[in-house]
Structure formats: structure tokens, C-alpha cells
Length: 380
Image 1 (cartoon, rainbow, N blue to C red):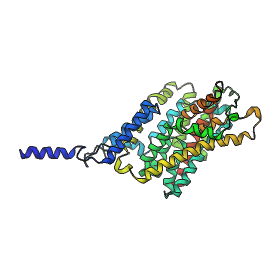
Image 2: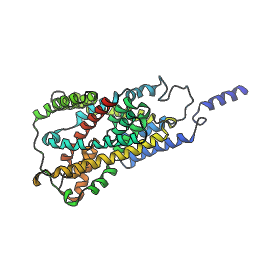
Image 3: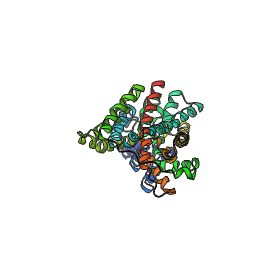
């Protein structure tokens, strides 16, 4: 009888109930909220469902030494997490983004590249704020990249500059990507006049197939020579676009923008979610990171809109840019461009801004990768 009781007592010690603390319950609730927002509100379900369920997985209280947790060397979750820690998931995501992205809007109107560059002020604004809050320069650089609204880039940079903060940075970046339709419209409306919102832009010129094939090669050479440290992201982005536009590698392009990016998205979401174990995640630094992330996102959106307003001072009346596409300078593709379109239609049902907004939107992807390369070069 005593043996049975001893065995039951030993079994109880291995259960999650015996190792339970309220902090784990808090994180599980956060995971459930992520899943709710994804399903009920349709906020980036491809990201929030895996991350939310990963948060739940990562916060089941474990008995030390079971070798199943994401931070336990050799466990299955730890092996999958190596793609985040060593930074080889983000370049694969960029390969898929390149293979699904049409750069025509940017090629037809190169000045839209400047809007994408202006939106990167959010990154450097967040970097300065983080420094003032006591983070080290490397940590501040990793936190700042949240302002680019680019989850893979945030993971890539934080894995090298601030691996201890990677969970909070990644979850923050993906959270604000999901909140693009909520955060950006009030800022856009606040910073523009009704007259500016009604500006109709000229239809973009037709881009030839030759231009589309040349662009990824020229774009990579220009950016890689400026920031060689950004090659893993930039190389895969432009290579993905080349296999899309070349016309002779359709199967490769379909694999990159379909099964490959879906698989890697699942692995990133689950493992990043698992990395938010309460004992490592619930600290004041995580709170600061979320607050800085919100600030950086506001700065990035405002910088894009205000830059267009400033740029319009130098453009002829019939060539002006609608400042509502300034928000698309962040690299949340294509959600930020959709926000430009939806907001524009509120004021003029015939004013279609989506194709114009895709220019700064894809420029933002390039810009965030370049900014990550710059920060990595200076701070690593």
C-alpha cells in the first residue's frame, strides 16, 4: 500500500498541477487571447494562431529535467527553436516573401522608395528610446527593429544582438503587425487634411518583363554592397523575386511562396510562442519592450505620412502623392497597403490606392532589412 502511495506521490510531482504557479496561468490566458483575436477578429491568423498556441504549450508547468521544454538542451522543441536562435528561419521567410511579391509599383515609380526609407525612422526612434530606458546598445538595436513591423527581421536581429530578449521582441513585433488595421488609421487621419486624402494619383506605368527580371539583381547588388551584413535577408528576398519573375523557375517560386513559407511560419510561430515561458518572459524588460514597440510603430507610421506631405511641396499639382499611402512604408506586407486602400475609400469611393501603396510597402521590406544590416554591422 505504501509503495502505491509513494508511486502516486511521485507521479503527482511530475504533473503540471504540482508545479503550477499563477504566472503560468497569466501567460496561458494571453495565448488564448491571441487565438481569440485571430479567429474572432481575423487579425493575422496565420501568425497569431501558431504564436498563441505556442504560448500555451510553453507555459505548461514542467518538472525540471523532463527534457521537453523549449529551453532544455536536446528536447524536440529546443531543436526546432534552433531555427529561431540561429536565425535561419527568417531568411526562408524572406525567400517566400520575395517569391510572392510584385515589385512593379516600386519599379514604375522609384520615388516611392523614399517613403519606405522615411518609415524606418520608427526603428531608430525606438533605438534612442530604448537607450534612454537603460538597455544596452545591442539590446536597443534589437528592440528598435520592431518599428519596421517585420517579425522575421526582428527575430533575425535579436538572435544576434539580444538573444535573451528574443521572445519578447518577436511577440511584440508580430503583435503590432497584427494590429496594423487598428493602430494606423487614427494616425493617418490625424496627420492629413480632407483635401490631401482626396488626392488622386496617376495610374502607374506598365512595367516590362525585362525590368522585372533585372530589378532583383540590381536591387541586391546595390543594397548588399551598402550593408553586407544584411545579405542573409536581402539575398533571399531578391532571389525569391528572381525565381518568380524569371519565367523559367515556376515550380521553385510556387514552393517558396506556398509550402515552404507556410511550414516555416508554423515553426516560427510555435517556437516563438513556446519561448515565452513565464519564468523568463514575465519581467519589466518585456513590458518596456511592448511599450517601446508601440511607440516605434506610431513613429514609423507618422514619419511615412509626414514625409509624403513634405515631399508634395516639391511636386507639381498633377504629380502629387496621396499621403494616406505613407503608412505603407512599414514592411507589414500587404496589410499596411490594404489600410491605405480602405482609408482612402472612406473619403472617395473611386480612389484606389492599393497599387500605389504597394510601392512603399515593398520598399519598407527592403528598408527594414537594410536597417537590420546597418544595426548588425554597427552593434555586433
